[in-house]
Length: 197
Image (tube, rainbow, N blue to C red; front, top):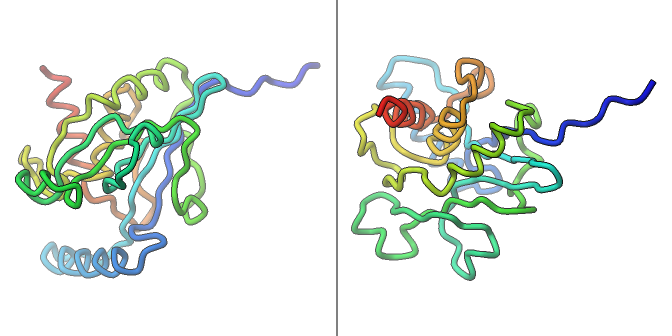
């Protein structure tokens, strides 16, 4: 009896604690979540940042939204950039983010991912569609709610937008228990609006 062949494609989601590896971002995130929880009369939750790894045949890609690092963007597979905070601030590289579709790339602080890798599909068509859609994600302002979704646009919005747009069952995908992924709903809402069009 032959061993079952490993899947040749998959889309894997990682949930990283907000600010993993950086005390300043983690502290700011806790302050933000504390204020949000108080305003919404709910318990404080852990905050998460999401990233994707896509495997298609022998190729592996990391998809993530991060601050612009400078240098040659081709080295990191940058396919899009956008402004942070306000559009006019985006003229400076200090206030820009980049979206990576990085072949053989790495995810910083992957060891801190909660629950390890979450394979959300093992389907070549969906994996290919995630890769195809990445350069077409809306270039909205990180940290603002330009589309009036009720949430700011950020790295979680990118992940949710890509997974929803590539046909994943989003009702089964979400942050770890007792956690929250700000921006997730924004990505789902914008993807649904584009799909309706």
